[in-house]
Image (tube, rainbow, N blue to C red; front, side, top):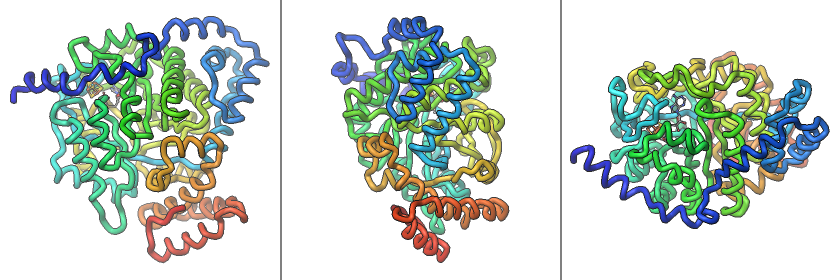
Length: 489
Ligand code: SAM
Ligand code: SF4
């Protein structure tokens, strides 16, 4: 099949504009540019008392509204920002506890029919070496990740007829089937192009965890400029409602994100909130499971990344993560190894819940051990190993969790939201974090990380209320020491 024939029929098979219609309001989508600009203008000099009231609302774990989020974004007082950073941590601790969940990105295919100006995988980039993992290569990649201690993946794919829903479903099934010495992948999340409802159902059937689609930019004019109209991705509305359709198909953990650097960061944060509210509105209060906020990184032969129109400084980055934390207290926040270690140290404490480490985003990069620039989408800035980052988190008093129990016990979607919105998820999550951390320390950690990690783990065990599950966790820990694995509440 000539690639162009494939693309033509691919677009008409996949893109079904009628599936978006029920989510439009008077024919308009949820990105209300005027509203965002008006709120940012009207809140341009927020009163300190108002900021404190908004922070108090956030500490009660209520989601903020657009006017409140705009006020936080526009705050110009350093002392108030300090209070917001501290509040971000408190919100995170009361919803998620002192734990950080770890995942590994796994790039499966870099064939792509789109031409996003900022991405190394864009179709016009002739310097990228294209490849798609064979079953055998995928198995090798997964084994390499299992051997490091990983239990959760985010599998990533370019958009291409050869990596459609059937291929994605096949690779998810394969990822779950690989096992070695008690090690296995227990949750497969996916970052891929928007699909139609029928295709999402195929992924639901094979046990997908979260489906992630980043909008890149919510600003329509900028979106049009960076995503040519004659590509699938050029259809902004198809992307905007990708996760509504995923929810409709029964994938109840969905994840949103924006690529920071393409347009004004304040606008994007406001739009992420509107996206959240739209999902809540149509799906019984269930907003995004996580929000991602990647910053643009350099990519091979990709001049746009060298001088992005709206580069976000480190200080602005910390602020925007804080505002997301305070605006949507129940959602997970993902900070990737795109960011250098120094920035991660600064930003984790304002309320991040998920990290990756020791990541390789070259196709086949984990099993070959090499970072291969010509096969990478962009460059990572934190090259530290998983063990090094886990060790640093121990020093910061945080438990590394590889827990996947919520997903496997059906605590997803509305059920997860119910727990996390009311701050009760700690009753399950801290105990399960302790149990998966114990597995990691025993099976994969360096001696130094194991020793200090175990001291922290015992402290966390003591912090579980006596009238809570402390006794059962202590019992499970003994069983894990004796060789059992995958025990959870
Ligand atoms: N092809 C799928 C899509 O477009 O949805 C998956 C894309 S990729 C695996 C995941 C994300 O990487 C993109 O959605 C984009 O936000 C981000 N990305 C692309 N180019 C980037 C760059 N130069 N620096 C940082 N992140 C980038
Ligand atoms: Fe393709 Fe996704 Fe890269 Fe765009 S961001 S060129 S769709 S891989």
